[in-house]
Image (cartoon, rainbow, N blue to C red; front, side, top):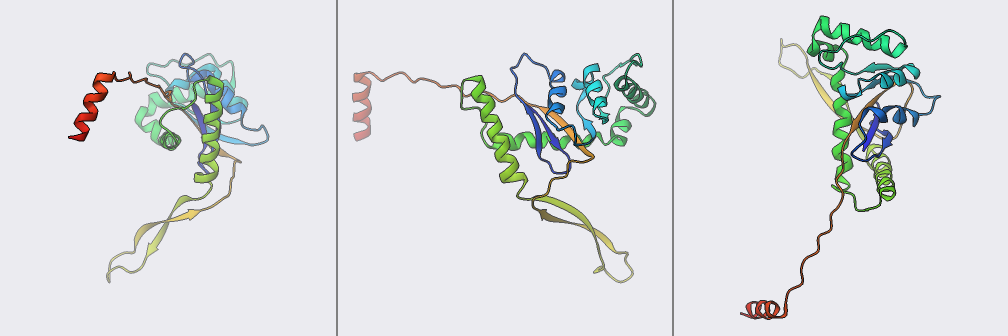
Length: 225
C-alpha cells in the first residue's frame, strides 16, 4: 500500500495498492495523477527510494519542489530536464552542507507525518480480511474513506504559541503551547504532499484438526472432574 497525504489537512489524498514485486518509485507518478491538475502542489516529500528520474520528472511536471534525499555517493545527472536539474541542486547542497543539515533546512523531517498515518490505517485492522486482490483494493479504499471522514475531518490538534504573563515578578514572560481542535476545512492549494508505502499482511485461515472420539470422551471426563 502506497499513500500520499496533504501536510496541512493530514488527509490521505492518494492511495495505491500493489503486490510485493512492485517497487515504491514506479508508484509516485500514479499517486500524483490522483491529484486534480487544477490543484497546486507546493512540494513532494519522499524517502530515498524515490530518487529516480521518473519521480523527479513527474514532480517537476506538476511544478512542485521535490524534497527527496539523494542516495549515498549520488552523482549529478545530465541536465536534460527540469527534474534532473532540481535533483542536481539537491546533490550539490547535500555535499556542501552535509546530509543532516540539508535534511534540516529542507524540512525533510516533516515526512514523519505520513509515517504516523500508516498506524492509523492499521488501527482499522492489522490485516486484510479478503483474499481476492481486487477486493483487497476495495477494502483499503473503504478504510481510507473512513479514516478521512470519521477521524481526520472530525478534529485535528492545532498547536499555537501563547504568551503567559502570570510569571513571577522580574521574570520574562514564558511561552506555552496550547492545542485546540479543528473541525472540517480542506485547503489543497500550495500544500505539501507526502509519500509513504507499507505492506499489509493478508489474513491466513488455519484449520484445526478434529478431535477423535476417544479424546473427546477424555476431555468431557476431565471437565466433569
